[in-house]
Image (cartoon, rainbow, N blue to C red; front, side, top):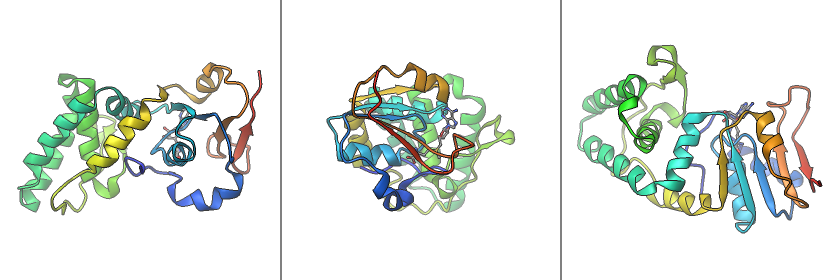
Length: 216
Ligand SMILES: C[S@@+](CC[C@H](N)C(=O)[O-])C[C@H]1O[C@@H](n2cnc3c(N)ncnc32)[C@H](O)[C@@H]1O
């Protein structure tokens, strides 16, 4: 299992440097800033039996996680339809397709179910520049990343990775709160919990702070 998408500030490449700070054992993992989920992937591989609380204030990406968790069949159906329409196209046609879909996502998203909206955004992230999520005022304050190279050969997304996430997310509680709300609302999960906060979210903190063994 690997992160579902690239994310600014994602921790995938930093994981080796964190080795000395990561716990050997934990029964629950609380991630207030899920983003692309690199740290969650590490934690899940370390202990798939743990209880996971995953939070991010970004409702667009949380919708993707929710859809893959609760409605993966419809998520994949929507994604496959886009993929089938997109792959046979020439590069200039793909570009048109991308920008037309980005426009729909920006202004006409109300016509979709939450799962369709999530799958549309996921398709755009998989075909957009560097695979990242960026908002733009020209796209209604919604996803506005320019198109990527658009040179996909036979697939746009990794089906087995989405299936792995679907399984993993079954043991996760997903929330979409701001950091204070997330921390205050997490149930007291007794010993061996692990909460990971980083300097980016705690302005006066110099480095990663790990709170282990949070007690009542
Ligand atoms: C750098 S990313 C997290 C990287 C991720 N933990 C990883 O393992 O790769 C930071 C995330 O924090 C979220 N975020 C920032 N401020 C927040 C807040 N106050 N409450 C909840 N989420 C917040 C952003 O939406 C973003 O997705």
